[in-house]
Image (tube, rainbow over the protein chains, first blue to last red):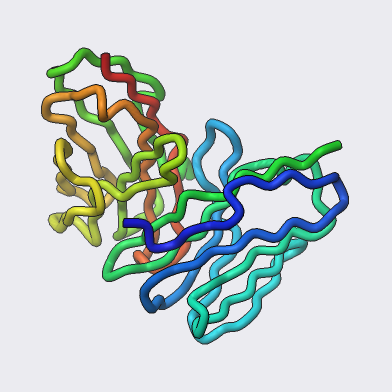
Length: 109
Length: 112
C-alpha cells in the first residue's frame, strides 16, 4: 500500500506562477523526500527533510513538514517551462523507501 | 562516474519467457532497490537490498527474484513473464535507505 499520497494528481499553471503540491502519509517517518521525473526518464532527487525539521529551502523550492498532520508540501516559486514534470514524495517505512503516485505539473507558456 | 546503469533499455518478451534485467552502480552504495512504474500507480517497490548477500521483499515481489552477490550489481529476474509484468522498471541505489536515492534510466518491458 502507498505510504505517501500526493495531491493534486495533476496541476496546470501559467509560467511565472507558484506551484504547490502536497503529500500525506500514514505512519511515522524518519524523513521525507521529494523527487522529480521528466517524461520517460528516471527520478531525480530534489530535497530531503528530516522529521525534526519544519521547513527547508533549495533554490526555488520550499518544502514544509507537519508531522502532527502527517503531511508535507512542495512549493515551486516562479515556475518555468522546464519545471513541467511529475513530482513524487517518498517516505521511509521499516527499511524501505515508498513512493506516492505523484503530481503531474504542467507549466503553460 | 556512470552512476546507476540499467540494461536493456527496451525489451519485448512472450508470455512464459524468462529474462534478467541488469542494474549496476559505481558509487559503492550499500542500498539498492527495484521499482516498477505503471500509469496511475506511481512507483512500487519490488525487492531491495541493504548490502551484498542481503535481499528482502518490497510491496510487489511475486514473479520476481533478486540476488546481491556484489556491492555493484543487483539483477532482477523474471522467472516466467506475464502480461501483468508489462511496465517500466527502475533500479535505484543509495548509501543508506534513508538517504537520497539515485535512479537508473529505466527498462521498458512489454510482455505479449
